[in-house]
Length: 97
Image (cartoon, rainbow, N blue to C red):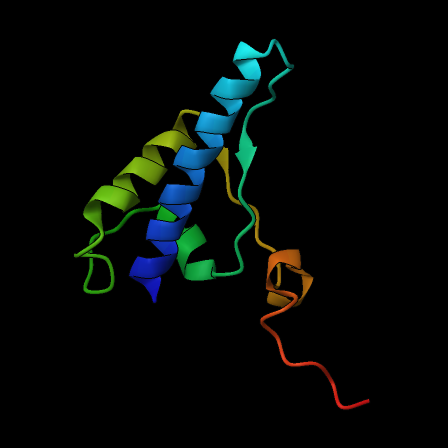
């Protein structure tokens, strides 16, 4: 699960950079850092401190790519609880009420 979340964060950042370049070509104001909201606290902590241990030994490339962009000030990963994520609204079970 951790590997999937880091991979998704990496792909999302790359795509958002492509969109920022497109907007720049269209002479649109571009603000940094890119905010990628995340509900997984493990992913956020690995981004801040990419310690190599059993959970992360297979995700070195994504982990260090994200850490570099974070250190360069291009990326910000604030925590957001799962229930506040708009993207997950249709993947959650509706209450019986």
